[in-house]
Length: 346
Image (cartoon, rainbow, N blue to C red):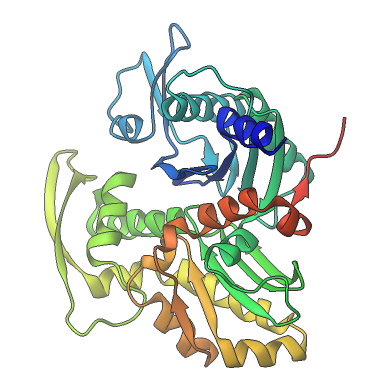
């Protein structure tokens, strides 16, 4: 019997998916993380066929002729384009399974804790249409907490901040449940947008999303640096319409991203206010763990620490925490079952 179960698991390739606004990561049972690619899909508008997904498709963003449509189908952590998400997921699954014959896999998909019933249904339907036989949803901060080995099933309070491309998820977890949470639709994308708007207003320079992301990675910071950095930016001059380049500095970018950062800090404070006093004492002792790509912004942990007077630590490999946690849940379904949002029967 055990042999049959393990054989079935091998053939079915059960998956845990972090379906993010910026990146999609997939964990396959007994194999670990097998895919980490941008959440982008490119389609031929004439034939409707998928041309590329992930990294290949991202290279096409903003560069395609009229007959090719490259798009990021996730917005603010949820599905903005149902059909494109389905196409993208199917493309990723084919990449992983390499067109082997397989039993339809079970899937655990990490979703924002503030997801609505309609948005949850869209995620579940997309996963089913892409080939899942059964779909479970898990809140992203819960998956991240499991991914960083926090004792989520104990009475002790654990606080996690997960900053993704489209959402920031803040949750206090105890006894396998979320005790206090705040989910805001502010993340890496809004920080990029703030950089685009700043350069537009101050320098009359128009840049694309990819350039804004590059600026954020190269010289972006949430807290003053020991040594400020500079970066040469190329874009279009809005006055005369021709390309130009300018040099910008990290203190300017810090000023540019002030608003989205202050909204994240405000959300953290709100979550702390909602936390029961007994669990607040645990957080004072243990501090706050940060996960997600947004936590890689220089000094964001120091900013939150200064604003809350609490110890704040960025997890190791913060980009992978959610999918690793979802993978652990997949591998130990009985133990972690209380954490899941199970698909309602139809």
